[in-house]
Structures are given as structure tokens and as C-alpha cells.
Image (cartoon, rainbow, N blue to C red):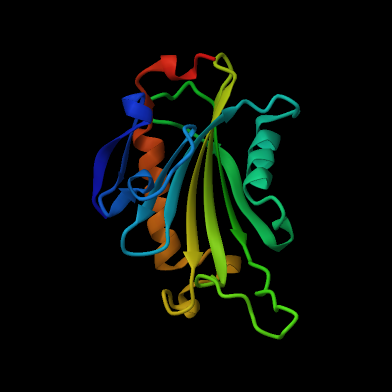
Length: 196
């Protein structure tokens, strides 16, 4: 997998992202506090979200779960958590950073009263979610990076995935490489980005 240096938020943050990922803002509106990149050859997306720092929790690990629950709000009943942990940003090693891997299993499609199912985009069997939380205490900010990997039938080999035995399959293995590269290359260049 090839990566290229990418400027986020007007160059205030830099990171290396896969060369096959494009900036979603070139095709649709994205909120100012987000940067979204989409795989041009699949369904995987990478979202960088600058949020207000979560303060009403006892630990940073609880803040990680709070952000994750916020992302999947309304559909958490199909969620499984794996491997929460502490991480390090190679270029900003003193900043508290945490990771989480989870999967979300969608609800079955809804059926309308006339018996027809609602038309929709492809429904994944599950979505693998790799989350990175960067906690900036002085700036009262959390940076949440999410790598979303929908596993759509026909786009992956189900036999290649067995999460119970840590067999992630090619799509998630690729996403882990993306997350590792983000941890290796993410750097804040302009701290003025966080001035309220």
C-alpha cells in the first residue's frame, strides 16, 4: 500500500494517507471540523474530526468509549469491542493517544407497510471500525480519527475473517496499516487551529 503526505484543515495538520483515497469535500459538503477521505476502489473511509474535549469522564479510556458511542449512536446494540489500548504518535510522543477496534453489525433492512423493502445502498455484513483518539488538554480539544471498513457481500471473502481468533482478513489488515501510518505520521503544524 502506497501513502502520500496529505494536508488537513488547510495544512494545520499533516498525515500520510493511502494514495487511492480521495478528499470527499471535492464531491460533497463536509463540516468544517471534519476531513473525510474515501477509498476510490472500495467502501473504506477515513474521518478526521476535531471535537470539544470530553471532560465529564474519569479516564481517557472512558473518553475513547464516549467518542465511539457518539459515532455509532442509535445502533450500539450491534457493536462488539476489541483491543482498546494506549498508542503513541511518533511525531508527538508526549500527547496522550488511544486506539480502539470494534465491529458494528447493521440492523436488517426495514420493510414498508406494503411489503417492499426500502431501496438503499449495499448493506454490509459488518463494519470494522478503527478509532484513534488524540487528547489535547491545553487546547480543550479531542481529535478523533476513524477508519471505517464496511464488509459488503461480494467485496470480501467471509471465510478470510474470523474476529474471534483475530483473523481480520485483507480489508481490515489494510485498515490496520492505515491506522499505523496515521500514528506514525500525524503531526500538528499550526496550533492556532484550536483557538476558540
